[in-house]
Image 1 (tube, rainbow, N blue to C red):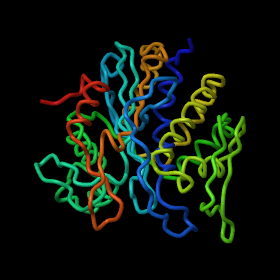
Image 2 (tube, one colour; image 1 turned 135 degrees about the vertical axis):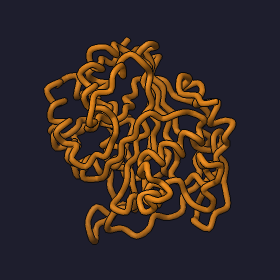
Image 3 (tube, one colour; image 1 turned 120 degrees about the vertical axis):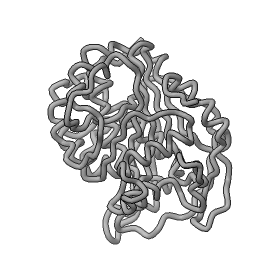
Length: 329
């Protein structure tokens, strides 16, 4: 049975944060995406060789003991207007050892806030940008404020956050010398506009190397299916990139140098220790899920367009299973 080595997991802390930014917004040259309908129920987590992680970023001083305790990271991917369409909570428990990731749909509305209020009639992907403009209300900064909001919704404490953009993702793929991925079936989006006057993209079934531009399209395309499948494609890309890191560990140095567009409070000084102490994680202890309808969200009415209402009891039950050490009273 394949296991993920410490280098693969911790390298993917950086990787996931950069990839997170690749799922955001419509194509720059395309019209607004058509309204999408929810897919069939996403009834439970998938278990297998996923590669979720959080992102190492600069820290002004060492953070002792990180490698000896479990932790959670909120990974956000934002476009140029900082609509954070990619929202993922990642947890690593060195003692399990387990690795868990939960993706939250960008169309989630009526999210509970730490102060007891509710983010009404606004999608969760707008919160980071709003908090960035309101330093009086959110003196802790938009990243920490968003982590606290997501933590309140899930009933857990989130230790760190990492935020990135399209540029960070493309720098990553370039640093890795492209990323090779194998697709079980073709991915087709007839609406995506990769260039002015050109419509449609296709990724054939089988093995292919994705350069920065092509990789960005792969993890952003969604109009051929929906947002939830896009989130699963991002996970598939993570798996492929993680395997590439294991095969070529020298890429880890290049990966870290490609994080110019990353904003995070994750302690970079802890990465070498994590690599050496987290150990290996068996496939059966790697869990991933998209918290979508019908199990975790339901259709909601909103002037903001297509929207989903969180089923808090179901979300928090899942969070207790995925991130038991982080559960708040």
